Amino acid sequence: MNKYGPIILIEDDIDDQELMKELFEELKLENEVIIFESGVEAIQYLLQPAIKPFVIISDINMPGLDGYGLREQILKDEALSKKCIPFLFCTTGATAAVVEEAYARSVQGIFQKPVTYDAWKEIILSIVEYWSKAISPNSH
Image 1: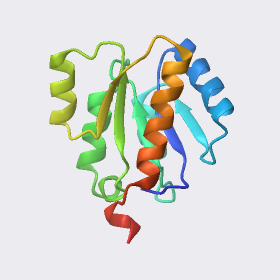
Image 2: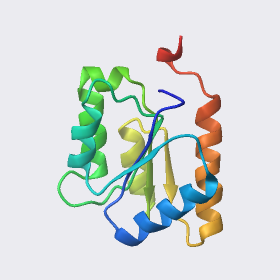
Image 3: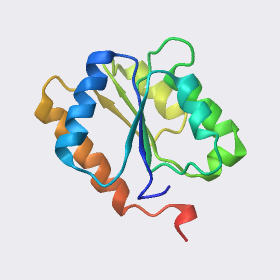
Image 4: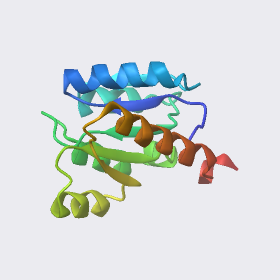
């Protein structure tokens, strides 16, 4: 985990992408925010050795490589796994089965997509504040 690295968002819904762009602009965080529409695009980016993200926030249900598949690829790739990137899901359908499936893939959190802008803002601020204080194996 690189506390100064980019925040990676993987979201295929255009409206959610726009909301997140607006939200991050308002928050004026130091981290660059990079949005991908698919897990395939995100994994191609993440596989670059010089890329050291702060955190990944991914939708689960996406065409092609979904959030679960993306998480599995990160865990299976030794170089990506060693980057110790916190991986979180944000989904509209956080049923008990979805939450269990997410944690079976060793995610560090799953959040129900909120309805209001202020609720989104609260979740994003909580995520950034928490992970900016956390210590990871590669921070030593």
